Length: 130
Image 1 (cartoon, one colour):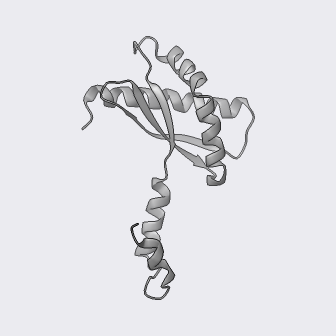
Image 2: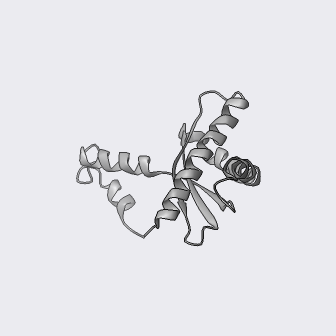
């Protein structure tokens, strides 16, 4: 259960990270790319922030995530400059791909019976837990 402090800190970081990441995309002149910060969760000791990114198109997601992870110290520095009056210490940033939209789409397809395991027996092997 997140405390109010963690929620407020996550919301503050989320807003500034969106500005930083989208600003870099615009500054570098990259077109046809959307990066959004879907969620930021902060640990109880406020030392680590897990940042979940939604990247469109999905084909570039893995490549872009590695680039963002390598530039994490620079992003943290930019973030520290923005929140220096609100936070004493900026948490370490850990970036992840948010695949919840893909998961929701798979569930929708299953509910619409577009993927019918009775007709297509190969789907059952993919659905088994390992």
